[in-house]
Length: 69
Image (cartoon, rainbow, N blue to C red; front, side):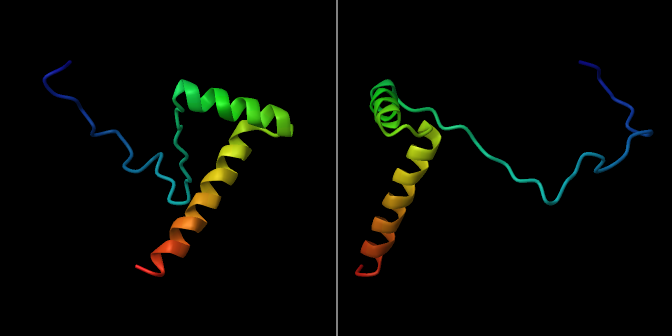
């Protein structure tokens, strides 16, 4: 690595995109992955779709319980 870098000819914010949407990967443990893959195959849906449906269902359950806390 250099001691100094010359940024005098650079453009600030050249790659900045305020409307960018970022997704992140989720890595399932092997046992969970096996179960979800088998279930997705049986239902003939993509595993991503199945996992998202399960997570949305859990979000609804959590939200409904939080009303009473």
